[in-house]
Image (cartoon, rainbow, N blue to C red; front, side):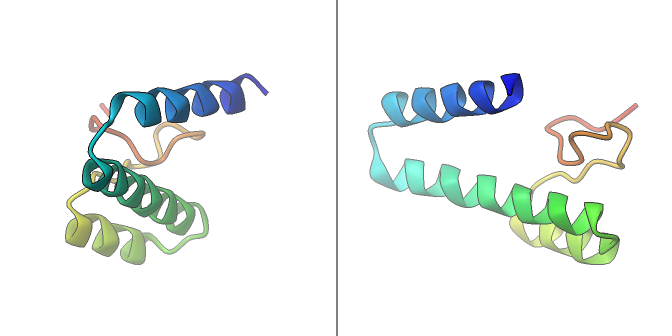
Length: 76
């Protein structure tokens, strides 16, 4: 439940801080791309996840964090 609350707070913060609709749309698109890549990794579609990450220029984790496969920083 804490994770959902934090995610909800993040969405509210982004929506209140971003005044340019195009920037907000880009943020939503990137967030969706990360979600889809994360799902692909968790479902065993590693190649698809990495291809999507490459095409969308997002980073895909190596699964070293079990609850968060898509990261902003590479896993060490």
